[in-house]
Length: 154
Image (cartoon, rainbow, N blue to C red; front, side, top):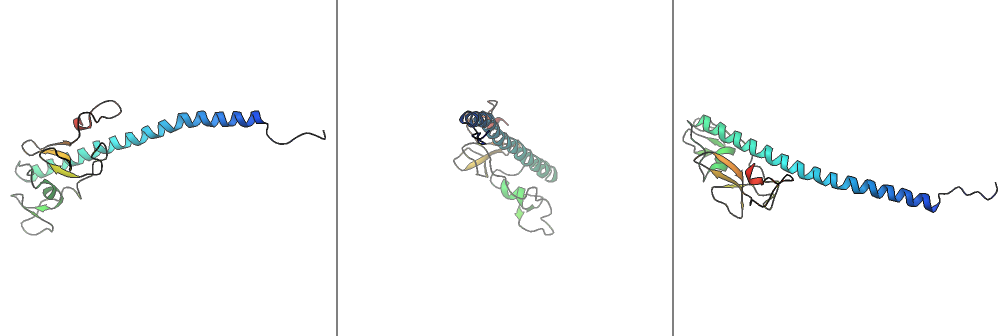
């Protein structure tokens, strides 16, 4: 066996390349769906934290929800019984803070924004109703998760 070659044949190399292509075609879409699912889970978690903070504020302030104009400060700073805020705790500002900071929206066209507003707007990420304490993502109905549910309905 003097002339035997020890390399791979062209057919063997083509088969390996085809197999790698099939594996890549299967794996890449699954990984991208994982990132979308993580963002959706993060939205659910952020909304739960915001809603919990609003409920804790309400419980400590005689049933009153944070105001529509001062909600970010009222959730992230110390407050007194009337809802006035202060960056540091003192003898009258004894409640809170309920959050370290307002989370940024992680999905949709307003990704990265964290402002809370009572009316929809270009820079508003979270839409808040001070009468009911309800909060949701300020995104259009067309922006949905993988199952077709609008993010604003979470």
